[in-house]
Image (cartoon, rainbow, N blue to C red; front, side, top):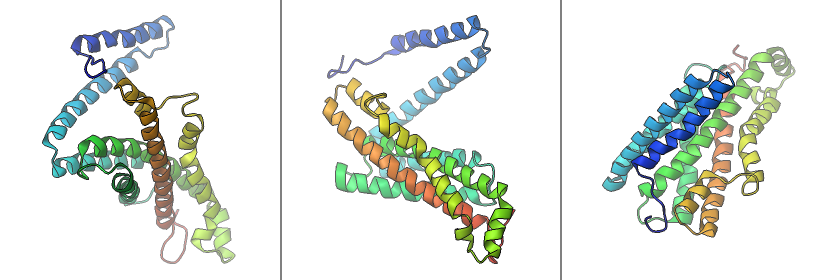
Length: 259
C-alpha cells in the first residue's frame, strides 16, 4: 500500500486473468461461441493498456510540451478516424470536418477548464491535460458518429421531401433543419442518460479511480462534476459542427441536393 492506495503488481495482474477465464468458461458452458472474441478482446485490451501506461509514464517523466502535444495529436487523429468510419453516408473530404470539429470543441472546453478552473502550474501538465483530453475525446467521438450518421442517413432517405422544400423556396439549411435538430439530439442521448443516473445507478470511472487512489470522495465528486459538464458541452459543440459539415457537403453551390 502506497499513500493509502493498494498498488497491483504483476502477480495481481496475472490473477486478474482468472476473471476473463471464468467468462470464457461460462461462454463455453452455455455454448455461446464467444470464447474467441473474449480472448481477442482481453488480449487487445491488455496489450493496449500496458503500452499506453508505459508511454504515458515516459511522457509524465519528460514533462515536455511537445511530447504532450504529440500524444494529444495521435489521440485526436485516431478519434476522428474512428468517428468518420462509423458514418456511412458521407462525402469526400468529410474526415477533415470530423477532425476539425473534434479539435475545436475539445480545445475550447479544455482551455476553459484548465485556465479558469483547474489552473495547473503549466498549461501542458500531462497529469491533467492527457486524461481530460482522453475522456472528452472518447465521448465527443461517439457524439460525432451518432449525429453525423443520423443526419447523413436522413438526407439519403428523404431526398424527395428535401427537394420539395427547396422547390417551395426553402434554403438548404431550412430544408434539413428538422433532420439536423434530431441528429444533434441523438448525439447527446448517451451523455444525458449518463448524467441523469450518475451517482445513483452508476459510478463513473473518474470518480471511482480517484476514490480507489485514496482521494477524498467529495473532491473526487467535484472532479467528476467538472468532467461531466465538459463532456456535455464538448459533445453538443461537436454534434453542431459535424452536422453543419454534413449539411454543407450535401448541397452544391447552386443549393441543389447532392445524392
